[in-house]
Amino acid sequence: MPDFTDNGRVFYNPVEYAMHHIGGTWKMPILWRLEKKTVLRYSELKKYLPHISHKMLSTQLRELEANGFVTRTVYPVVPPKVEYTLTEKGKRVIPVIATIRLYGMELMREANLDPEIIFKKPEP
Amino acid sequence: MPDFTDNGRVFYNPVEYAMHHIGGTWKMPILWRLEKKTVLRYSELKKYLPHISHKMLSTQLRELEANGFVTRTVYPVVPPKVEYTLTEKGKRVIPVIATIRLYGMELMREANLDPEIIFKKPEP
DNA sequence: CCGTATCCTGGTTGATACTG
DNA sequence: CAGTATCAACCAGGATACGG
Image (cartoon, rainbow over all chains, first blue to last red; front, side, top):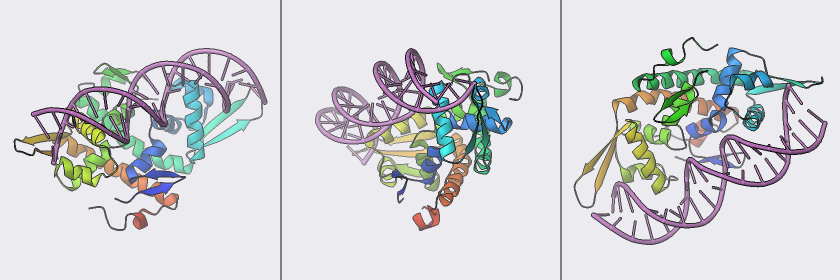
């Protein structure tokens, strides 16, 4: 299995390449959130992801922006207002995340962590 | 989004739960290999994943075994012979990995890293 | 309100070496 | 051949503080 390089980084296979872009603890939850509500301010996003740290949300959003998954719109007002939206590229990841989510729920059921009990209502 | 606990560890959502089981650099490549060739010795697996370290392959296989994705069969011979196979649970992850792989290849194409050029022939 | 910089900690991984 | 132990290096991520 030949390796390949992108931006000076070596990857071993397409799975690793995909995970480099949407992996990590927060990228998929962020993108998923933006699919549910397509325009979100930084502070709203933060509210929906209560465990994420300020720094993490900030850096993850920059990486998602740099890789073309979200757009960042700054309104020149005081206090600042910044909105995030999925790009077309960002929208194309959603089905992948949906697949992983479904599989996660399947695993939860197998472990007797019934998602229908834990997530009482379909996530907003 | 309510949290939940499994084995003393807190998870925030189904995506994180799924990634805990099949995420990381190596778990999916290992499982993928085992789908292509359903019975593999430790050393064969190692050969197919040239960059993985001995320790990593070992620990990842133990975790996959502990979580019920692979079975480990030890033949009491000298020198030792150990074979790994996908369980039924392991087989059920394959479509998820396939989805991620396909998406990875899509991303590669978008970045002008054409997988059809890099992976000259369909992976064995 | 939003973003960045700095510092610091602990988990993850690789190298190496040793065992049955 | 397969697995474990030890140690060191690295890096993700948190806390905090400051700036626009």
